[in-house]
Length: 302
Image 1 (tube, helix red, strand yellow):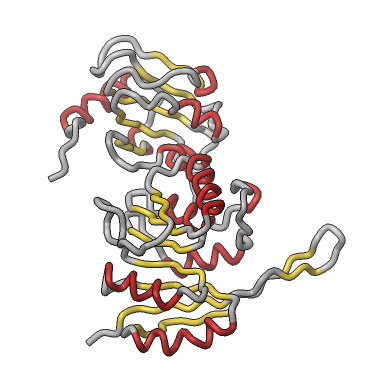
Image 2 (cartoon, helix red, strand yellow):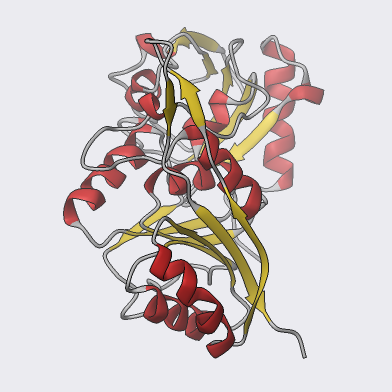
């Protein structure tokens, strides 16, 4: 069983402390333990009005990062010790940006403006610009639907930067391995990881040596189709023979190659869809976006 410094008894004592001293409805409270774990604090606060955070000492930039993520108006309720006792204080995140965490303790974060319903397909303007040409938000929403991720899923994403960001937000209790071959794209991916406070994303330049140590084996992979796709699928199946796949491609040759590639690797196609999106722009002209194919596949049973 995983060891934790915050046992059930300790958690209950903190719940009692905050219920007595802060404006909190326990029935609507989200709890998050970020001690030594790859948990995403910022997305959790963005999507919950009340978050009880259990943390160890350190995290010197925790409040600055929240402020930088436009959470400066959130209220922090806390005390100065490691025990749930004594005077309670509360300040805005914007007033705490030069502070870290002094002790292993709990703090209550209230965000009245939380977006309680997560909306897949974020506006591209929210991502770091960098070197990446992002897929349009409508296509990304369809991709996220086809991935059908749960909060504890582990996923490998190859050359899909904005997909990796949204996947990390949804699979908050899982992990994301983001493979970026280009160093500029890796830099942009790192900027997005920092911007969105994603602690469950590991960025690698290839899978030639398998997945990094101590990371969970991915259950599903998203791949932007390229001439490497054959070796990518073989490598991923060597890591997990039961891996599911969603392939994105604008390349006709890759599309024609996939049926043979799936058969060669013991995979069956479960779905193939063509996604076309157009918008009316500011000049009242119809503006089409790149129209990819999305091919889903999984291991043939039997």
